[in-house]
Length: 449
Image 1 (cartoon, rainbow, N blue to C red):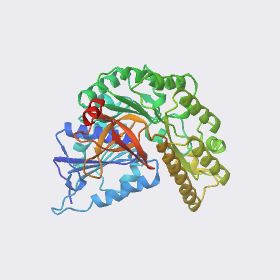
Image 2: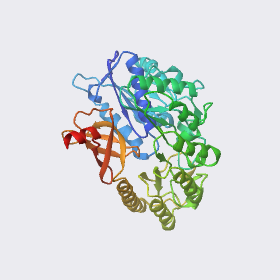
Image 3: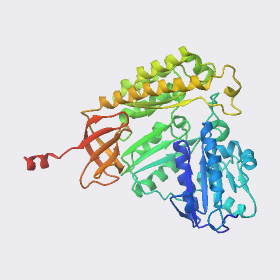
Image 4: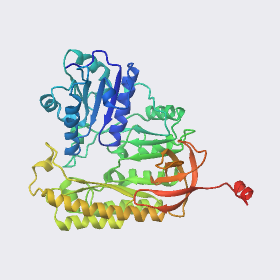
C-alpha cells in the first residue's frame, strides 16, 4: 500500500478553534501555490492534512480515528499522503509516530510554512518538524486566496499566562505579535478580494503589541475603505484590566466599524477555582470589567468560556458559575468538561471530579446558557440593524447573515446575494438565531401605498 509520489490534490480538515481554521486556510494556500488543487473530501485527495487541536482529549482521539480510516487501501491499492498538523502534532509528535506509523508528515503550528518541503521529504521517509523557529512563519506564507465576505486574520499567537489546565503555552509558544504594518497590508489585500468583515485572532488577542496596541490596530484598520466590520477574539480578562482595557473599551465607543461584541472567557464563577486555574482574575474583577464595558457600550453582546469539573470544584463552586451565567446573561458561551491534559499542573492535582458529576454539571450549565442566550436574543426584537449575508438558509429564498451582535439572522430578501450588507428589522428570536425582515426604503413604501 503506497501513497502517491506526485500528489495533485489535497484536502485539509480542521479541528478546534478559529485559529486552526485560519491555519488550515493558510496551509491550503501553500499547497495551492505548490500546484495542488483543493478537493472537498479526503476520499478524493492525494494529500490529506489533519489540522489538530489539543485542548480537549476527544479532539486528539479524533485524529487517530481519522488516520485509521485514511490508512485503509483504496481500490487501486494506494492511500493518501497523511499529514498530522497542529497542536496535537506539536505536543505528541513522537507518540503519533509510534501509534500511527502510516502518518507521512508531522508538523507543528509554528512550522507549517514548510509543508510543501516536508511533503517532498516524505517521499523517502516520514518528515517531522515540530520546532518553534525564531523566524515567524508568516514571513514565508504566500498571498491569501480567500474570496468571501468574512475572513480571519491572525495578529497574535502563543500564550504567557500558563493556566494550569491549558497546553497552549507548550504547543503555540510564548506570546508574539505580528507587525502592525504587515497586518494592515494583509487586511488591504483581503478587502481587495471582496472581504468586508475581518475577525482579528489571537490566543490572547488583547495582549497584541506589534508597535500598536490592539485598540490602535483596530483604529488603523478602520481607515481601510471597503472594510465594513471588525471583530476580535479571544481576549483574556487580565489584559482587559488597566489602561489597555480602557483603550479597547474606548474603541468600542469611538470606532463605528468595531462590532459591539466581546468574547471574554471567565472559565469559572468561583474565585477559589479561578485561583487554582491561575487565571489572574477574580469573579469580582471580571464582573467589574464587564460593568465598565457595558457602561460605555450598553448594547454590547458578551460571550464566554466555561470549564466544569476542574479538580477540587465543589457544588458551591459550581453554583457560583451558574450564578455568574445568570447575572451576565451571555449572548453565547462555550462550555466544556475539564479533561486532563498531560504535562499541565492540573493533571497532577488531587480531588479530580468524577466523570458522572462533570456530565451532570455540564447539562445544568448548558441549560442555563441556553436560557440566557434566548433572553439576550429576545432583547434585540424590534431593533433595526445591518446584517452581513453569509450563506443560504434551509428554505428556498432564505439567507443567513450575521448581526452586529454575532447572531445568525434568517431573512428572505429577493435579489440579495452572499456578501451583501442589508438593513433589517429583527422580528423574532430563538435560542441560536433571530428572524428578520428587510427594511423597505421609504420610496418603495410610498410606491406600494
